[in-house]
Amino acid sequence: MTPLLLLLLLLPQQNDGRLAEHVPAAALPGVHAIITRAAQDSLPTEPLVEKALEGGAKGASPEMIVTAVGAEEARLRNARDLLRRAGAPGPYGTRELQSVSLALARGLPDRIVAEVVGSVKDTTPGFALHAVADLTAHGFGADSSAALIVAALGSGLSGQRLLDVAAAADRELQRGSTRPQALARVRSILPAVPSQPLPPGAMQGATRPKRSP
Amino acid sequence: MIHDLDPRIHGALDGELDRAALTPEERALVERLDAAARALSGTPVVPGLSRRVMGIIRRPLASPVARFRRWLTSPQPVTLSLRPVYSLVIAALLAAVLWRGPVPAPMLGAHEGVAQFVARFPEAHSVAVVGAFNDWRPEATPLADDDHDGVWDARVILPAGQHEYMFVVDGERWVSDPLAGRYVDDGFGRQNAVLVVRPVRAE
Image (tube, rainbow over all chains, first blue to last red; front, side, top):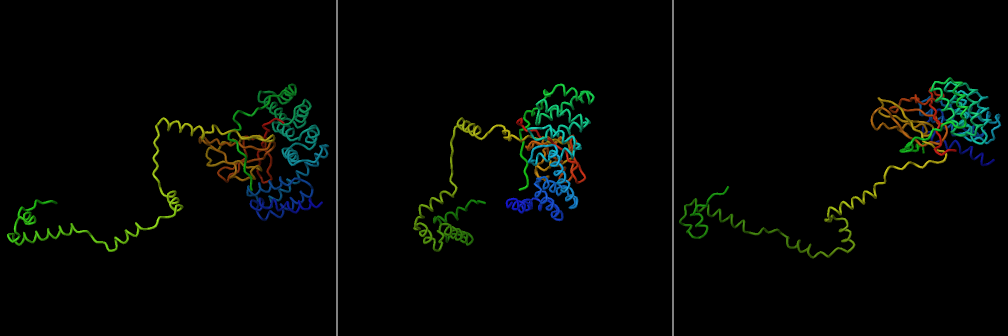
């Protein structure tokens, strides 16, 4: 219990430097209150700090920043609830919660997200959700998109290879297939969808981004 | 200007002609020349010169450490004589040591990938990519347009997974990547582009 209390006491101070430097002072009390509440509820706080920094960088008003941070907290909470309902074993990491949160923000219905999460057994659902969201972004129906990705999971594909499934369906569209034809074609070749290797020299000159000290 | 000397004056100066035989003007000229000759032949006397010179000569030698320090810090002539063929060999060896070849690709972790950001802003003076990966700081990750064709790009090592980002043009204009294909409301009235980074090493 004591470590948790210590963590709660230290958490706002740890974020103080980054927030105080880049976020309007008028927004700080509201942001701190949300971060503290999230920490008490075992939600990840880094996405909330990032959202506040984003608002500060974009010149948003203090009220807008507090509202956006609150909305981010609500999305994370909703994502965790959805994962629990889908029977995904916890505890849930920041990346996992953010994946679900982003899938919801990209317009996937709760039940579709729950269906995909329930089908991903041994890895985080991030890539599977991105693949479904990519398909829906290209005009495929949410149900048929989820069905294709679940079928891909059943065929043994996982992780980033699921993005290849969505890319393959998109290529079929570009070749002139209708959407049902594209889905049927990709489903018929599972799991042998072409992979997208890193182009030669893609890593040359790559640098790691610098974050605030 | 040099004039030929009158033989009578010359003779009087040499003592070959009695000066009483000269005209008053000639005698005055001989006396001026005599005075000039005396001034030129005399040694100037500087008061205390001998004492100062002897003082320097008799000064005790500095300590060996001081002399060594003076030698270290004062300019010393260095003469290097090398045959051209040896110079070329040394230059080639130095080049081989200093040239490390192409910049090696960075080492990536198991859960990292490379994101290539490309944007076309022909009129821009600067373009940067911002996201949570650099705390949304426009100065942190600039894009480059080395050939000035208006196409800016940067390769960034990021953790595998999703990343929201925007471009910042000329330090003040926030622009969603028109080529991203994935977008999400940012909560501030704009849309962030969404990038999914694949890990370089398969999971």
